[in-house]
Image (cartoon, rainbow, N blue to C red; front, side, top):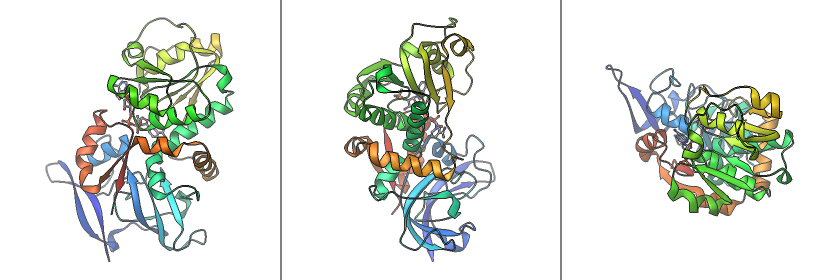
Length: 330
Ligand code: NDP
């Protein structure tokens, strides 16, 4: 048997290229569950893996795709049976293990989560790692005491994948949401998802040397990092919390001091979706099924095919992808 996949190869000159190929099943990795993949999606990390950047892919040829949803074809693990609908995110699948940009994947049963009945495999990938991470952020902020009564919540990188789902989730939960974007033409889209206020990226992207600024946000989901994260922390209200998710503008936060922690009791919450324990994944997927407005989700989605991925990979690295890209692998 064979399957189709986006195969990333490295030439003798070190150049990396990606193309859709027919691959023999015997080349699948040695997992215990085989999944007929229906949908995958595009994440920032996929952009890096398809281009061989960031040192994420250790061995070539490689099938990228950090998440997928589909139906179990065969299982050597008693937890899964043929026909079960499953979703996979994280565990470095698509980086050091062949991933979801394929019609078939073979993975460890521990990495899978049963798909909630309310969600289709396409919706699961419209949500994807980005949406799961947004939900994990909201849950962490709630645990830190955030509620709609506390005031405005900020989402940075709002027109991206994590940001779009974050805006829609928070708005549905009754929060007043402010969305930071560098794309003025995304304002209508973000308002449609539920943002009340649009903040231009330039208002927050410049470093400043002040240890604190006027208190503005009860909480935040930050997909951007860099100086923007420092500015957000300086503007967070007394006792507020910021979920640090991403590094679209960079990993270093040079203009940051600990003053917001010491004088305002602000919390910085680290959010990891990749190694997240099983029970917390199940909770987050169930919360998504209950709380994410599906009509808003659909408004974020554009659908593409495996062969579109090389071009899409460049666009996401340039910050030009809006919302969520779903890949119909078949
Ligand atoms: P996207 O590319 O879809 O979104 C990122 C958004 O950030 C862009 O759409 C843009 O939003 C904004 N942005 C891009 N470059 C800059 C810049 N230089 N300065 C300020 N804003 C910028 O990526 P995702 O939403 O999929 O991921 C966002 C981040 O979260 C990435 O760094 C990713 O690696 C990380 N991530 C982390 C996870 C975890 O487990 N912690 C899981 C998933 C993602 P706009 O156009 O609105 O300004």
